[in-house]
Image (cartoon, rainbow, N blue to C red; front, top):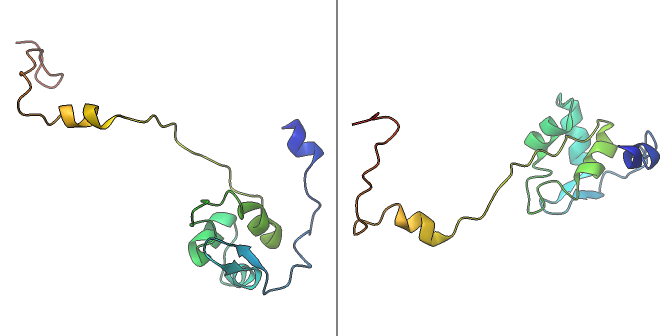
Length: 113
């Protein structure tokens, strides 16, 4: 939070960006397209994303979110990424292995036997 406060970009930093400037390289969205989304009623970066596809490419907005926020004047959407853990294919395959011995433990939905 301290670094964000210390290094926050200046207000109206996107005003001088020409319309033909590419903001989102993954989806090739220009500043003009982002501004057009604002005229269509977008009031936040999420709606701009839905109208222009900015932030839907390979980087998922990691690179272009600050640019979209600068052009729109809206704060960037917070990054909410779910926690994930890789699962080996063997674990997934074992769930469907018909040769494995049956599990004698009661299932939660069945209750005790």
